Image 1 (cartoon, rainbow, N blue to C red):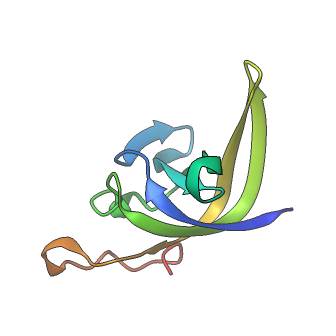
Image 2: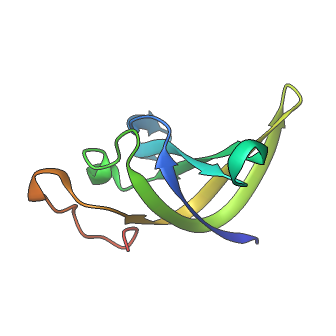
Length: 106
């Protein structure tokens, strides 16, 4: 197993989807891999059963996500994902609301 921690911003609002094991939340975190003109964005897909976080995981929200790094290839492109994530919301909360507490939230 390869463990990874990334700190970045959500590419778009999180979405609740339904799969074989019930509802889950999916989102992508963008991370710049270098500074200046040499930098490029890398995106990590994240899935979690913590659907109660959907109101807090909105586009441009900064988060830290730790978990198991996985990759897959499709149409000649490499896609990275983080499984079994631990999620920490960074920055201030809008309207002084607090996210729900749970094992997946740091």
